Length: 417
Image 1 (spheres, rainbow, N blue to C red):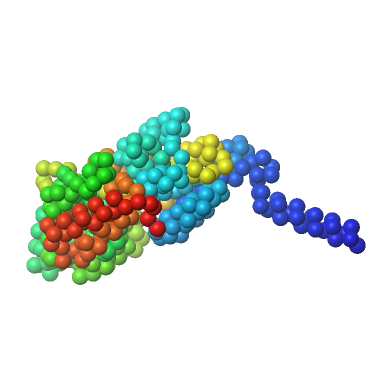
Image 2 (image 1 turned 180 degrees about the vertical axis):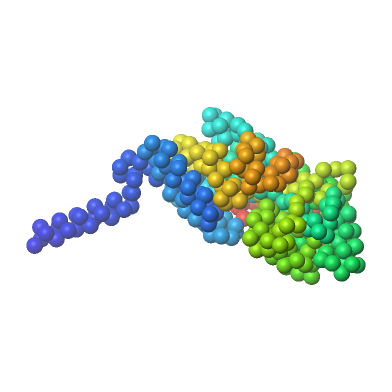
C-alpha cells in the first residue's frame, strides 16, 4: 500500500512539473507575448505562424492584456517591477517606451536585430520606440486620424480648421447636419488633439531633449482653435464627454458633417449605415495655418523584449517575425491596424481594403509623436485636465498652467504609478 501511494504521488508530481514546464521540458522554450486583446484573430495567427516558422526552436504564447490602455500598462508595470521572468515580448503603447527604458525593464535593439527591424520601416513610427538615441521598441502597427466628411453636405472638404468651422456654421444656418465630431472628453484623446494642433502650428509640447516644456505661441494657437470650435455651432453638445467611439456613432446617426477619427470608422459606417456610407469620404487632417502642413499624432503598438526574459535572443527573433510583412498585412486586413512597413502601402490587397491608403501614408510620413518622456502619463494628465472642457479654455492662461504642471512632472523622479 505504501509503495502504491508513493507511485501515485510521484505520478502526480511528475504531471504537475510537466504542466509548469510546458514545452521547456522538451527543449522548446515558450515565449510569452503580452499584447492588447485582438478580437480579429490576427495576433493569434501571427503567433501560430511564427511558432511554426521557428522549426521547433520556440513556441509563442499570445496573452491578452486588459482592454483599457491604463490596465495594460498597470499589469506590465507591476510584473516588471517584480522582475517577473515569464514576460518575454511586450506590446507597448507608443507612449511607454521611454518610461520602460528608463526603468531598465526592456532591452535595447542592437546589431543585426536592429538593422532588420528598421529596414523598410516608416521613420516617424520608429521615433516612438526610441529613447536617448537608442531603439528600445520596434513598431508593430500604427494609426493616424483623417478628416471624414459627408460629400452630400460638403462637396469639397476643408483644408483648415477655420474653414471647417465656417462650413459647419453655414450648414447650421441651413438647418442641415453640421457637427464636427472630435475627442473632447478629459482623457488621452484630448491630449492627442492638442498635440496634433501644436505640432501643426509649428511647435511642440516638449523641447527636443525632453527636458523642459516648449509650448509657446504654437500652443496658444492650438488652444485657441479648440476653444473656437467648442464655442461654435460646430460643437456637438456632447463634446466634453466624447471619445472616438461616441464620435463614430454620432457620425453614423446622421447629425454630423465632419469627423476627426481613425480608419476604423470606415468599415463601421459601411456595416451600420450603408445609405450614408455612399457619401462617406475622407481627406487629410485639417491644417492650423493654410501654408503649413498638418501633423496629426500617430498611435499604435511597439514590440519590446523584457529585460527579465530567460530567452532574449529568441524573443528578439520572434518579435521580428511577429511584425514581418505577412503578419502586418494580416493585421491590417483583418484587424484594421495600419502597417509600419512602407512597402505594404503599395500592396494591391492592402490598397483594396484601404482606399484611403495614400492619405494614411501621407499623414504618417509628416505625422507628429506624443511627447517622448518617462513622465508622459503626468504630461498627458496636465494637458487633458487643463483643457477640459474645451469651451472654457482661456488660451494664454491655459498654456501657462500646462507649462507649470509639465515642468513639475519633468522634475519629479521615479516611475508613475
